[in-house]
Image 1 (cartoon, rainbow, N blue to C red):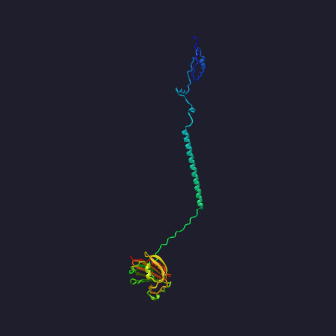
Image 2 (image 1 turned 120 degrees about the vertical axis):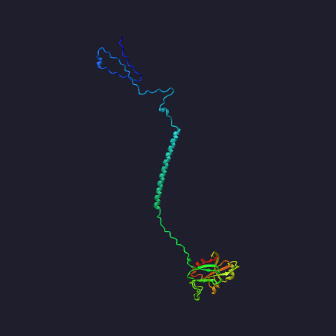
Image 3 (image 1 turned 90 degrees about the vertical axis):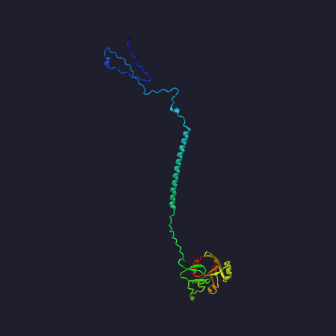
Length: 282
């Protein structure tokens, strides 16, 4: 029997043969001992064997699967860029506006004039100069009037007699001032019965024979009145007066005449205040 040739170790595809270590010298020197041939069954396999692709399917690389970008992606990128540009523009213009406002405020603070504090005067309360005056009521001729307490009055004793007011006592004959004495003033108030009177003009044509220098109108006691500067011959039976101021008005079938002289007396302002208090009785 032929001695069996040692078989060469078989190597699988994709594996690497591991060399066999030599036997020790002790084994080789033993007589009549034939060293057994040991096949190297150790095989080296890769850690993972790639699984073959399934039938009908092919493995595509990433370069093959990635195509050109979609149109919707380009649109989204464009919108994002526009939004970022809008934010940057808004921030820029806001910053420029703030800087401009700061410059304007600096200029205004430099050019603004210093405010001048003006003290508002306290209004002086208006007082009635006739508040403390004496009052006179004429029940015969239905009117009331006020006059200064330092003045003198000669009230009417009967209807048609008239009432006299003056800054002097008219009851003392030697105190009677002359008609043209501007240091004093005399006032006479009288009412004439005129049941059929039509107008002041018609009544004056018949009853007033004096000379008229000027004429105007005024409201007195809520009634329209006629103001005339004239001469009058029957004023207190003093004879012809060079010039006097007479005020005429009609009320309830009576013609009222308020006369004062001289018209240029230094007490003329007091006379005007007396007129302001004239009222008809209700």
